Length: 420
Image (cartoon, rainbow, N blue to C red; front, top):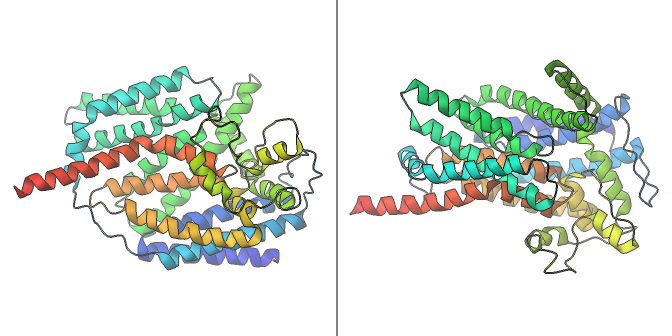
C-alpha cells in the first residue's frame, strides 16, 4: 500500500473512531486507532532519521528495509481497521443487568475495607522485598498490587471523611504506595492503577472535553514508558539523573520511537513464517489455557511464541528477544495475512462482549472496570507473547475479578433482603 494512502486511512480511522465515541461513549475504537498511529509512527521516525532499525541477527539474515516496513505496516493497518470497524459493527449499548447503586458499592467496600488494607500491605511488602528478584514467579506475584491500590482509591473516594487529618493520611498513604509501584522493570504495574483512576476521575466530564484528557493521558503514558526505560539504563550505568534530564531523555526516546519498535518485531515474524516455522493455526491462543501449568509438571509442554519455537526447532542457544510484533503479528504467525483479518474479527466480537459485560453495573463500578479493560489492552496489543501477556493482565487484576464476583453476590443478597 502506498505510504500516503496509509496516512489517509489512519486519519479517517481516527476521525470515525472519535465520531463513534461521541455518539456511543465507547472508547475501544479510539484505542485501536491511536495504537495503530503509534505503531506507524515508527516508520516516520525511521524515514526522518530519528531512529534506526533494530540490529538483531539470530542465525537468520533478517532484512530491515523501508519497503518491507511498509508491507508490514499495511498488514497492521488492515488488521487494526478490520478490528475497529468490526467493533463498531458489533457494538450494542450495554444493558444495566445488575441493579446495584453507589450506595451498595460503598457499603460493600467498607465491609471489605480490612481485607483490602491487609492485601495492600502484603503486596506492597512483596513489591519492596522482591524489588530486585528477577524470575517469572516473583515478577507475577508483585503485579496484584495494582488492584489493591485501585481498591484503596475507591475506599478513599466513597468514605467522604470530614476529618482533614484523616484525609491527609489517606492521601499521603495513597501517594506513597503509588510511588512504590513505579519501577523501571514493571512499567505496566504503575499504569495498571493510574489509568483506571484517571478514567474514573474524569467520568463526569463532557465527551468532547474528555478527548483532550485522552490526548494528555496518551502523552503521559508514553513519557512514563520512556522514563522507565531511561531509568533502567541509567541504573545499569550507575548514572543519576535530575528531573529535567529524565524528562528530556524520555522525550528524546519517544521521538526516536525506541519503545514502539513494533514494526521491527513484525518484520522479523514476517520473515520467519512460514519459511522457518509453520503457522500455528490458533495455538498461540490455546496456549493461554496451557500457560498456568508449570513446566516442571509437564516438561514437554508446547512453547509459546515464535522465538522459543525457533530455538527449539533449530537447537540454538537460549536467549531472549525484546521486540514485540503487536497482536497483529501474533495473528500473522497463526495463519498469515488471512489470520490477521480472521482473528481481528474474532477479537472485535470478544472486546464488544467484554465491554458490555463490565458495563452491566448501574453503579460507578462500571467506570472503574472500563478503565481496567482499556489498561489491559496495552500489554495485549503490544504482544509478543500472547499467553504471557494474558498472564500479566490476570495476575494484575485477579483481586479486582474476585472483588466483582463477591460484589455481585452481595447485591443479590441485598435485593433479597429488601424484598422480605
